[in-house]
Image 1 (spheres, one colour):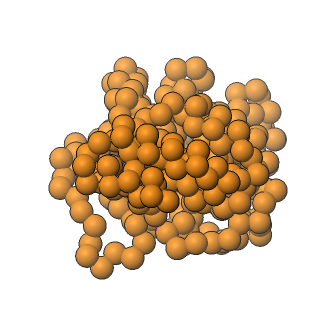
Image 2: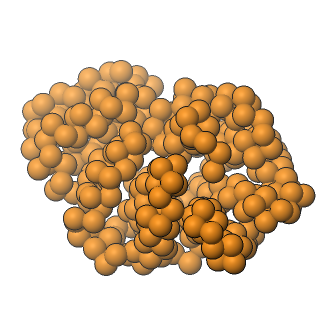
Length: 313
C-alpha cells in the first residue's frame, strides 16, 4: 500500500509518471492477489500509453483476480473490444452478473452495444444482413445480467442506421426507410462530454449517413458540418469540473487531463464530420492524432479501421 500511495504522489504531485509506474509495479508485485492494485495499475498504464495488447496480456495473466471486481473486469472487456475481439467481449459481458456502481452507470451497457454493433458491421460486410439485424436489435435492450437499464439520454442512431442498411440489403425497402428515419431523429446540436452520463455527440454522424440514405443530401451535409463546427469552436476550451460534481467520468486516483479529454473529443467529432463529407485523408489524419495521444481511444481505433479496410457502409 505504501508503494501504491507513492505512485499516486509521484504522478499527481511530482509529475514523475515513470517513477509512479515503477512504484505501481512494485506494489502489484508485493501483493499480486489484490485486485484493487491491478485496477489502478491499468488506469496508470492507460495514462502512460502502455500498448493496449500489453495491458490485455497483463489482465489475462491473472484471470481469476481480474474477475474479482466489476470495474476491473469491465476494463478487461474494454480492452477486448479495443483489440477487435468483439466475440470474446460479448461472451464476457453475457456470462457475468454485473452490479451498478456510482460513476459507472452506462459503462457496461456501452461496451455491450459497442461489441454488438461492431459484430453487426462484420456481418454486413460478409453479406449476412439477417444476422446483422439480429445483433443490432439485441443492442436496443439490455439483458438483466448487465445490472442496469438504459439511461433516457442514450441514443440508438448508430444501431438504427445499420438496421436500415440490413433491411435494404434484404430487399425490405419500406422497413429500411423506417429505420433510416429513426436514425435521422433526435437533436442535431453537439454538446460536451464531461460527466459519466453525458452522451457523446458522435450519433450525429449516423444521423447524417441516414439522411444520405434517404436522399436528403443537404440535411446530411448539415449534420457533418455541425460536428466540424463544434469541434473547431471548442477545441481550445478551458474545461473544469463543477465544484458540486458527484459523478466524474472516471473514478480513479490518478488525475485526469481534462484539456486533453476535451481536445480528443473535438478531434473525434471533426474526424467524423470530415469522413461524412468525403474528406478521408483529413479524417484519417485526425484519428491518428487522437491515437498518438491516447492509444486506447477505441472508438477512434474502430473508425480508423473502418475507413482503411472496410467497404463504405
